[in-house]
Length: 270
Image 1 (cartoon, rainbow, N blue to C red):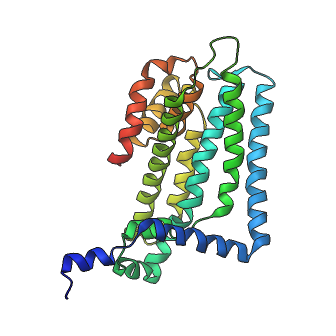
Image 2: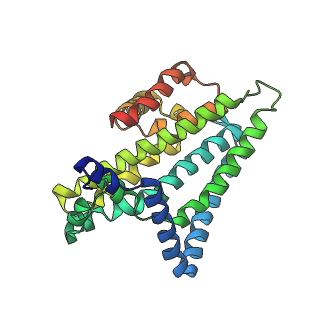
Image 3: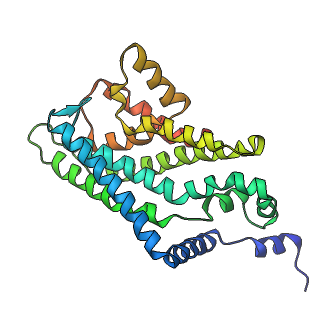
C-alpha cells in the first residue's frame, strides 16, 4: 500500500514539542559538561541582579517614589523586567547571536533544507540555562511587591484570577515583542554579513524599557516616549504587565487600557 504525498508529508512533519524538548535536554547536557563555567555564569548573573536591586534600594532610601511608583510597586516593575529579559536571553539571544555565523559558514543552507520550520530551528536550537537563574529572583521580587500592595492601608490593589491571567498574557506579549525586535536585527545579517553593532543597538534601546514610561515627560521625554511606545515598542514590554499588578496612580493611567490592547496586538504586527 503506497502512501499518498499528503500522508507522507504528515508522517514526516516533526513534533515541535518533542523537538523543543530535545533542544532543552541537549543544551542542559552541554552546560553540565562544563559545570564550573555554568556555575560562574549563574553567579555572575545573580550578582549583577542583586547589585541592581541594591542600587534601587539606595534610591528608595532617599525618596518614597520613582515617577509615581512606590517602593513595592517598583519591585513588581523591576521583577517583571527581569523575568521577561531572562526568558529572552535564555531562549533567543544565544541563537540570534549565532545567526550571522550561520550565514558566513553556510550553516543556514543546511537549516533551510531540514524538514522543520526554519525560524523555529534557528530561534530555539540553543538554550542558555544559566540565564534562567534570574527567574527565581524576579518571581521573589514580584511576590514581595504584590504581598505589600494588596495589604497597604491606602488604596490596596485587588488581584484576582483574571488579573493574574492578564499579567501572564502581557508577559508573553512582552517576550514576543523583544523576540520580534531581535530576530529582525538578526535577519539584517543576510545583507550586512556581520551585524555585531546592531546587537549593541538592541541593548541600547532595551535600556529604555527598564524604567517606567512616566519618567519620559517634557520636550525631550515625550518624543522618546512616543518613539519607544509605538514605533519601537520597548516601553510597553515591562510597563503594561507591571501596571496590571501594581496599578500605580499616575498621569498615564488614562491611556492604560489602549496601551494594554496595543501590547496584545503589536506582536502579530511586527
